[in-house]
Amino acid sequence: MGLFDPLDLTVPTIAYSVLHQRKPSVTEGEYVKTLLELTRQAKERSEDASRQIREWRSAQVANAGDAIVDDLLQRFCPVPGLDGALELATVEAALPDVRLQKLAGTGREYLTSLGFRSAEGEAPVHVSVLLFTGSWNYDLVEHVVRDLMGIYEYPHLQHVEEMGPVIFFTQNQVAAAGDPMGSVPGEWQPSIFFAKGPSRYDDFRSALRPAMDSAVTRGGLRAASLWQRKLGMGNIFEWELRLRCEPDPDRLARALDVFAAEAGVAAPRVTERGRLLVFQRID
Image (cartoon, rainbow, N blue to C red; front, side, top):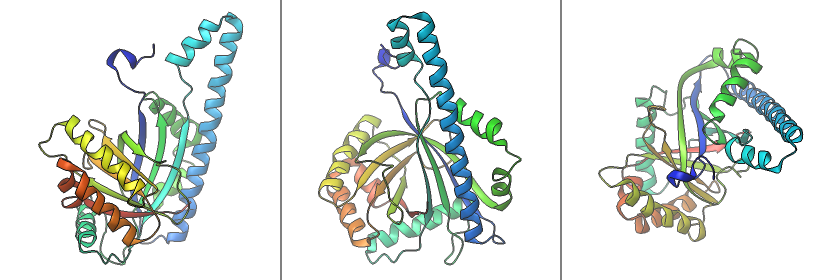
């Protein structure tokens, strides 16, 4: 029995995300270079910290000489580590579909409300996503960033100096169709932020799950994932529908048709009242 079993909960997959935008005085090339170096170092040092934990756990099992100890450690002390990292940036895509134009317009208004510069021609808004399993990985991420990397050293310090507006938030993955992190450079990762409304949580999730599956199998998406903001962890909308697709507005419009037809009580929240941000992978 694991720690989540008594409440019939699955081990959470958590995304720690940062929305950020460079200062006008910094070029996009400079900003991306610093950002990718920061991500590389964070991943490298996280993997090293996970290795140290695995070695410690193996030593405990060897000293005890008991398979039961190994089973208990596997259940109650899983090895932490990053499952993946993404660096995405908004793109000013031509969206001929009227519904997409409306959602993208409210998306720009949403960015403005969060403090970002969103007028045409402004610097793209970046999102950095770290994906990990199990809540106690917060401690690992904090240790890696604060103690191993140093917040007053390159590239962390340089990124802070180059960065303008920034928003931090953390989400639980509620459902996924396809691989949310298996992206390739250049593909689109549209995100639709929205509020649930008066629907019950179970009804809302149940309505979106089959629509996500249909959007992947029939709507042409590569993946679709539903994320719910953790309590108190950020000031974004509570829900985000994160998609993966080719950089093709027609493909995105067809997927939205699927959600409109099959998402039940959740459909208008996503396809009519959502805030669309079209991201593209840059790493």
